[in-house]
Image (cartoon, helix red, strand yellow):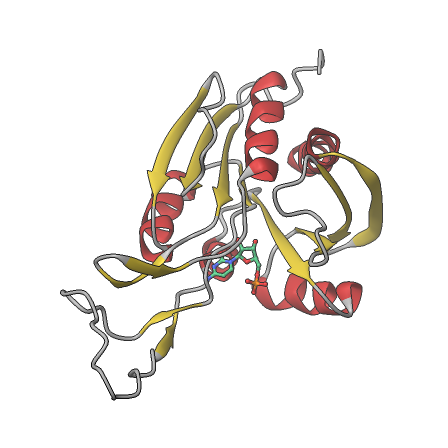
Length: 220
Ligand code: C5P
């Protein structure tokens, strides 16, 4: 927008989806395209912010004016987000970070053995970057999470907002061709201390601008 209400602010946005390696050729991934995170980065630049975009496996051109840090796995994303976000005014975690990763990385490609059943892939928990940001929050810093849910969208969102210690949580319904890879999104933004903001289906930029409106109001 014309209104540079984020001038002088440093914001960090994560986008895309992490890939958790199984062996040198395989990974566990997810359906995040990065479009919502990139829309957040573009709109923040337009509103005057200095923007660091931490992008995981996104096939989109770098947004003009943002510093882009490319990462692959959740562990790499954690390092980049904590480094850039430690002293930032706001951190928005729009990325789909894998909750689990394969417990043991195999240095060589897993082979199929004729006549034998495949080995199960055992999983272990990834660190929760958003929860860590919530715990390390600096004075005045605004922390925003996203929650993609298929069921009980609002109830799960409320619980997640409290558990992860963020200020705002953008919840949306996913599945059935909704959201992933689409230009449009619809969401409800929950606030730790106020009423929810309902954002009707529209361009991902429109949702991004609502998020920055709420962030800017909290930074004042
Ligand atoms: O728990 P869930 O994955 O649904 O939470 C989603 C939110 O938490 C998103 O903002 C996502 O970026 C963040 N997250 C994270 N680290 C994880 C898992 C999710 O920061 N390991």
